[in-house]
Image (cartoon, rainbow, N blue to C red; front, side):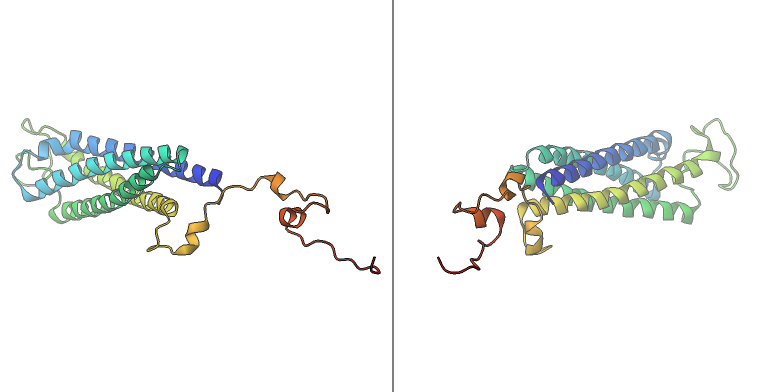
Length: 227
């Protein structure tokens, strides 16, 4: 892979991280604005878990956006060693945080199915949780809160998994620039190489002392009678 191709791959990876981070941030903000700001008022362990996972989602989205921006900057300034380490460390942190966020969202979905959404309906006073009806003391529509929460959690889960994948890819690219040994060995050290100009491959005339070295050819052998 040449330097120009490497720059393009790194820039595209950074752009994807920025887009994924923004979408995850919007999904977490919608979930907080429509559901969790009412659920957080109830003193329940499940509701607390919902809020913690949502805060983790917002934090993960911010870290993903930051990592993507730094990766884009590195694609313009590849020789900068501090930027290389910044991209590598932030990408690793982003991958771990996104994976943790995905596990938390998966746990939230499982707990919602297990409890039949009782924590989501804690702000409303019903005689029975199976009976869903509009009530004056209910700040939201209880007939839609269950499906809306699961839909937003599912979207956030998909994007968290995608963030983890692209963060690992970004960390791999930064690893190749840093030439670290433990992960991929010495073979990856030579993947990024400068493009060879076409003039360097043009053979000179046979009488030149650099003719064989420039063209990669051995000098012609004399096959006729000795002079």
